[in-house]
Length: 108
Image (cartoon, rainbow, N blue to C red; front, side, top):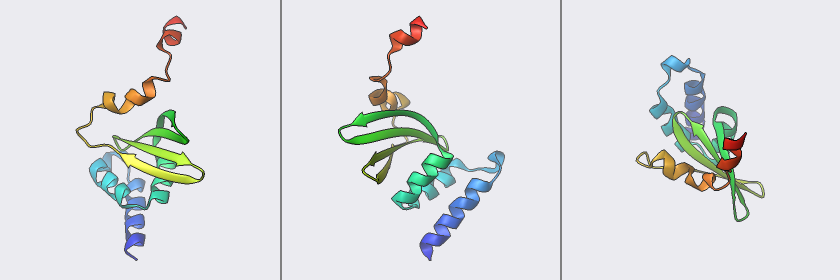
């Protein structure tokens, strides 16, 4: 029953108009959801920023309510991880940059 309350509360928070949203409250509710539900919310409500491979995992970087969240997927498993608020954006995106060919961007 407690889980249902969290899920309903989170759904209600997402239905608010943007000017009424409280990103800190929404993200704290997101973190309380079970992993499978977090993955679903990320793919539906988050913005996919980048993807990379790490061993057998596909790692997707999302933005959700002004926070960075990674979704690790492999063989039907979905694991989310978030970053400390003090982590710099450069430190978060750095692992994804090695797959970006900047020279191709400059030439096009």
